[in-house]
Length: 187
Image (cartoon, rainbow, N blue to C red; front, side, top):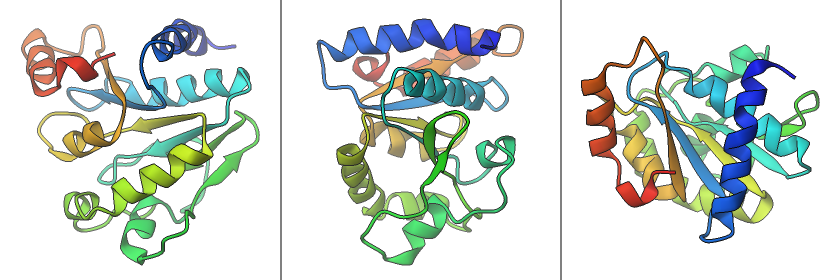
């Protein structure tokens, strides 16, 4: 087990505790700015939850600058962007990752209009379908600043984890990120 997975274990325990007192299945992982480690935290949290015999889906929710599929060594697979554009109703573009033991919905090819696609209503429909299929859904979203994409994800999830990186995240940026989130959603 890596050090990062070990760090994800307390988060996993805390999420399970919170789940006893409130509905908590869809968790948004974000940061204030790029390169604070949110994708790494998302992947490791999904892995730790899967090790606990939960059926876990990791969604690569950053349609502008996706990194997860590449980090897992996956080729260009159809993903969330293609599903949102397709008009399909059935869930598709989800892939089982045998090594880590969870499912992944990659972002796919970055669309030209990600925010418009996310606000179309199809994303809400998809999240409803996925909530029936999985015990946990972890969404690796874009950073809060300066995009509005994360606010769409925040409305579709049950709670938010905000990742900050020591030596990288400035106090003013962190405060701005906290101010943009609903306090009741912050885990």
